[in-house]
Length: 69
Image (cartoon, rainbow, N blue to C red):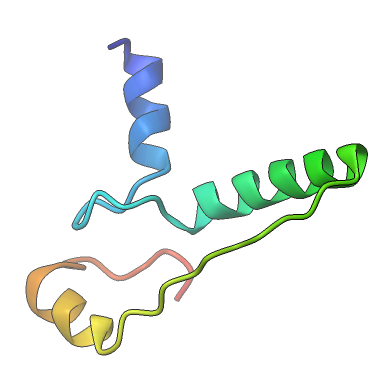
């Protein structure tokens, strides 16, 4: 994997969980919404809300403050 590919990979994933992050979701949602409008197709979005994730994240991750705070 090239350095560029690695940077893209890590830019779109959470370092603790390796799950796609908000940046990835926003880009994919926009891409899929444009595609569904163009094709006249329906679009379904499935979102999972993890209860008490902050507690897990405080204990096992986020050693640094987020950039936007």
